Image 1: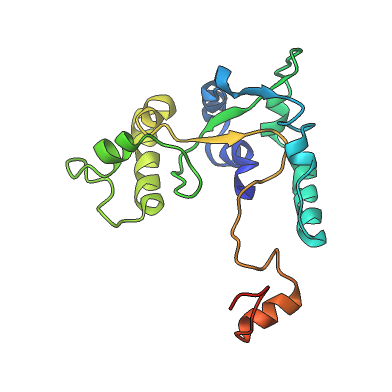
Image 2: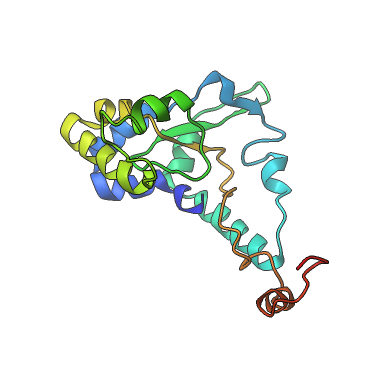
Length: 191
């Protein structure tokens, strides 16, 4: 998400240099995330060919430009590959993102929603309940050990573009389309 593009910078301002050095040592680059550089990464087509109306595209390009000066990007630029691959990274986070994510079903069933641990009650909002628990675990046990059992990471392709966001109509509908929708008129052949 847009807010995650500078996560390491935000982490630096909150927790200081020693915690940041530990965080940077915890960033992982699994071999499975070494992908075709023609498609992924700052020079890949997935970022270059992003579409959007003028306002959204301009916003995304501006964010991508700002990303080039952040710690997250600069640290990644130290990793060089000469095999036509771009290596995406996974940065540990103290926040459990419940939107677009990947997790094993067993982890939810046996840990997150397990009544024995009382982390999140059935029907509870995982982000609100789990994030403070992760932070307390890290404060108590240290970053590496406190984060280990939660193992939540941010995926970064190092393009500076965000790929998720709310589709509330504010960014992709014209003013006329918004008015039609508000007035209950047919929109693109649908009501």
